[in-house]
Image (cartoon, helix red, strand yellow):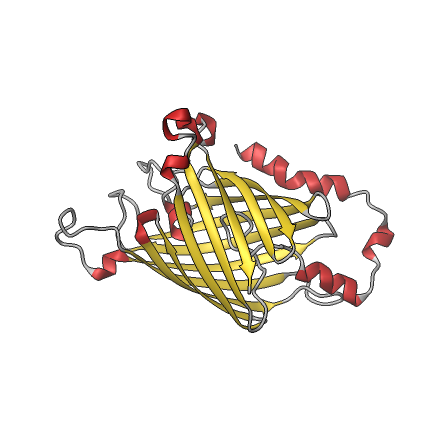
Amino acid sequence: MKHFLLFIFCLPLLLHAQDDLLNEIDTDSTINQYADAAFKGLQIVNFQSTKLVADDTFVLVVAHRFGNLKNGIDTFFGLDEAVTRLNFIYGISDNLNIGISRSSFQKIYEGSIKYRIVKQSSNGFPLTIVGFNAVLVNTSFEKESFPLIEFSDRLGYTSQILISRKVNTNLSLEFAPTLFHEGLVSVNEQDNTQFALGFGGRYKLTKRWSLNIDYGLHLNRAENSPFKNPLSIGFDLETGGHVFQLHFTNAQGMNTNSFLGQTTGDWTDGDVFFGFNLSRTF
């Protein structure tokens, strides 16, 4: 799996290593356009991208994950076991977004803030850096099953630094160091505070289509944990006022804590979920 991921992320770099050097000579406006359009969607697939909603703009993201394809016709290839997340995002400014979401996966409510720290520019800083923080509440825990549960056990926290670079017209890459905390963990030996490294990329195929990939490497998962690292592969389609993302992933949960800490699917065993993200700007 490690060799596969290394190949996927390095292949576009190898393909463009011999490009004419003149392609690197451009005006400031062109280079800034590269930075602005590093990612078309607010998410790569599961991971947040460094794109932000514009000032005084409202965006609705509808995310859907069907059930496991492996179950076949018994669940109509996952249609009977769908999970939905609605995420409402508002641009307070071009550099600051706030969001609130609700997911049917564990009935999670989440509030988030996303803010740009620095922006890639020509003859300036070579990267775009964005911060993302979220607080979630898991409302699925029932008192009958967890009689001693406290409100703090329902809470989860996420802190991420999203670092991206638009390498050229077609290729964008992202690195995302992540800290997340779960108030209640399902594995006895698992630390509540957990760490992960996210890797993602976008490769433009045509004017409207792109290939997107992201992967999360969990750094302190308990040895007896049944959960897996999330790997997602998909395609973005730009259609006027929205971006439509189609993808395959081994994670059904869509909040950062969920897909990093509780992914159950295994690509090697065919445990894959089909899904989509649909962003609509108002």
